[in-house]
Image 1 (cartoon, helix red, strand yellow):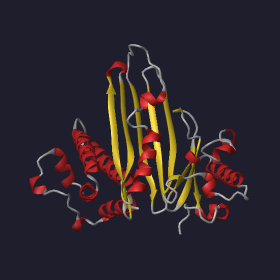
Image 2 (cartoon, helix red, strand yellow):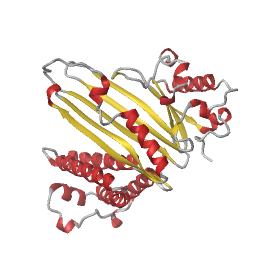
Image 3 (cartoon, rainbow, N blue to C red):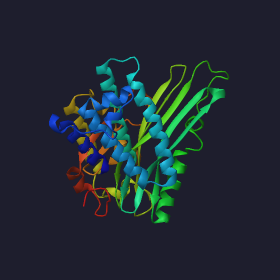
Image 4 (cartoon, one colour):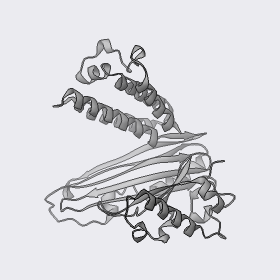
Length: 326
């Protein structure tokens, strides 16, 4: 995936010796502001700046007109937040802030845009302020472009129905607020691409909301799209009916969690039924991820992610399952 390639670029830039320091995407002789001067004075930041500029240029040339508009808007927002790194901060604090800003932005671009053959996933955004209820919403969602058009339309139609970006997160939540709220309520949702190839799209969504009366919740869920059938991927499409795959995977997950020791008695938190949940699975290029306790819960609620190598899953899979590497 592209995200790995560009992460490697960033690491190479950091590791280069002083005699061959990378230059940023602009001419340091013309550096006018504090941010530009900080970047020019730090080899690692200079490398990140050049890597980000190159990634942005590639995307700007490749995306659709609607995708380019979103890309430009988000980049301008990011530049404003990046430039705030020099405000009332020491030099070391500024460098840490800038490093974090570049790392986050590169990761965003590499996990929200991806291509495979004639298909591409681009970012779309929906943000709104509802003054009457003092509600702010910010969400990003994937949009498929390319050909064949029938395949693209099927995926985008599902995304529109499932996520309802036009309706909004507040309206979809059913939350009731005071007639005259004395504080703000915020909603956010964003996605990460785990996989895009000619068989499968695997996406992770994270959602949060917090209200003035101390109510704060989070949730994660997956959307896995079967590109051969033009519909959501189901567990019955993946696992063999003659295998007790739920128990095998559950036992494996609980064993991994017990060995990690981060959750005491995970079997008391997560039941076997959680394994048989289409929204709980992510399928990457190298391994699958099972999300346990991923449904809507308070910020203090327990959840866990268990990485499962495809070699563990392979004996349980149908011959035509589109998830394991070829």
